[in-house]
Image 1 (cartoon, rainbow, N blue to C red):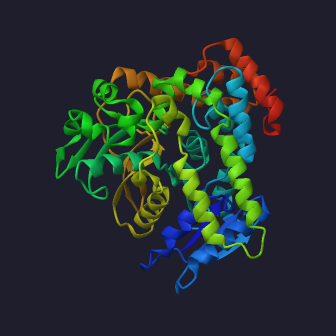
Image 2: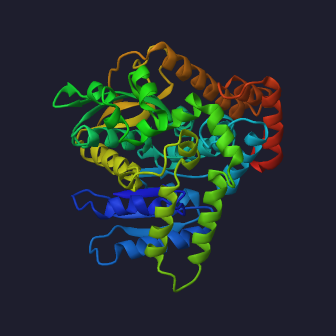
Image 3: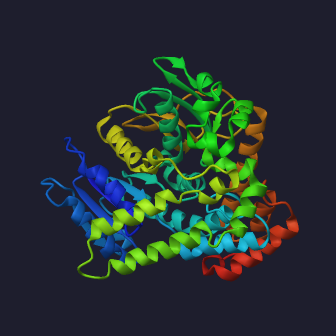
Amino acid sequence: MRLTVLGGGGFRLPLVYGALLGDHAEGRVTDVVLHDVDSARLTAIARVLADQAAGVADAPRVTVTTDLDEAIRGADFVFSAIRVGGLEGRAADERVALAEGVLGQETVGAGGIAYGLRTVPVAVDIARRVARLAPDAWVINFTNPAGLVTEAMARHLGDRVIGICDSPVGLGRRVARVLGGDPGTVFIDYVGLNHLGWLRGLRIDGRDQLPRLLADPALLGSIEEGRLFGAEWLRSLGSIPNEYLHYYYFNRETVRAYREAERTRGAFLRDQQAGFYAEMEKPGAPALATWDRTRAEREATYMAHNREAAGAGERAVEDLESGGYEKVALALMRAIAHDSRATLILNVRNGTTLSVLDADAVIEVPCLVDANGAHPVAVAPLPYHATALVCAVKGVEREVLAAAESGSRTTAVKAFALHPLVDSVTVARRLVDGYVGVHPGLAYLR
């Protein structure tokens, strides 16, 4: 089976390859094709993968290319993990937004809109190429903003594109662990949009154990979300929000922490990864060890500004492990390729799952996966406060898609202005001006 990875020079790719190395089942992935527009990054990551494969007799064969059509043609699965504009683009997204006093995170608020506006046209081109060159392939999308990009690609690929994210996986794992459940067997009642969802129940042997967690302040304080949001707020919600909801519930505090920080998250990652790739240009550099060291630092500093704003302290040692998106991707490919049914939290078209959204809206929800793809399970309606956020943000996503398709600057302003974390139409106009000024990829907005 052939897997093509778009964004194959990306830093997190060794996580995916590591999961593939552990799969020795019949029908597994035997060929991995890495595609990237940056040949130096491709070479660096290929070196890390070679170190990982050392001593593994049946390791998947790795080839690299900068030719997109060549990469796609003949693929069984296409894993999309591109970053349009690179980490310099992410740093600019943060900088422009913070100058206007609003959030610049890469998937939430103004930064997420800017990232979406320059990513959607590229993702749509990829979807069209896959439909033409590999019509039977399944696309697994990890490109952020994951829900928005998956919805854009679904307009050309239908249900053959499925979005994944490691945030719900990490949340479910943490909650299952403190409740004494096996993360691999519990059922997680989780629903929302990507980076905008709530864990509303966790069933162990058929019984919902979430009320036990919410009733125990000490137990709540032992998980990252308890320290981030506070036990009192979680009890009042009656659910455990995705960590990205901290940007909404504690927006003022987070923006202040971001503005006071020496470097934003994007700037930190830009500088850190520049150091990694520069080190990898040295022929004698130990590839895997260098990557491992860099990854550990990256994980330790994840959402550091939010934890600072909440007074949550450093990340717990057990939370420094990978979020698990590579395991989700592998489980998804196995279930589709071998019709070995699995239940996974994925980004898929809504159908009739959430009545407040139309059928084509991509949502994040538990799905039953088989050879025919991912099928969202029935879920209870969201409470009004969550429904309001979901509908507002989905409305913004639709304006982003409309702006990307039409090239309308006016529609782009509307997308910014309607977001719950942008408080002024005037600010929205200045944001569009600022982003067009720093991103050549937004020159299409007229």
